[in-house]
Image (cartoon, rainbow, N blue to C red; front, side):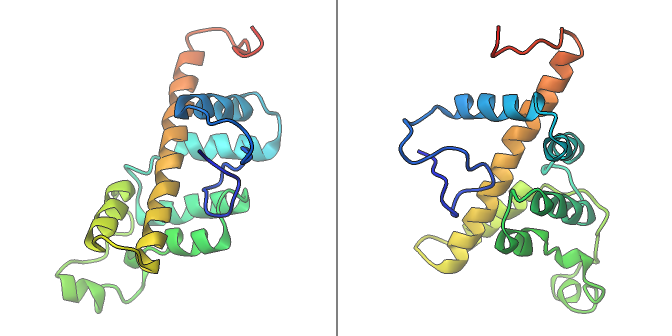
Length: 170
């Protein structure tokens, strides 16, 4: 069951005392809020969701996405700090980390950020430690964003082929 605690990612409109909802129901509710809101922040969220795919995003664009999510208060300063840090963006990457790993910085080359964070979780092994919890949290944020990204882009594509009526009011 999702709660509105700080440990959850950006979508915190569910309260602890509500019955458990299926994941698809939550996506439908959030999608409805996003799609039929005239609020400028929601329109900015739609822009982010339709522009950035976390499975195919450069480190530079990942920083822009994180700025947008932070500006919309969907992630905390803590989350922003960890998600937006992109080693490839460091000016001395090639001389330090890149030299150690034998590669050059690629700040504009798209990467799969979900796979990258999954690898980080796996590399930390099992057991409870603060680094693993933090890494799992960043992965969870990316996965939640990914679900909304595909829901919004699929909805946008289906809307272009159908009328703009509100399905929850029908």
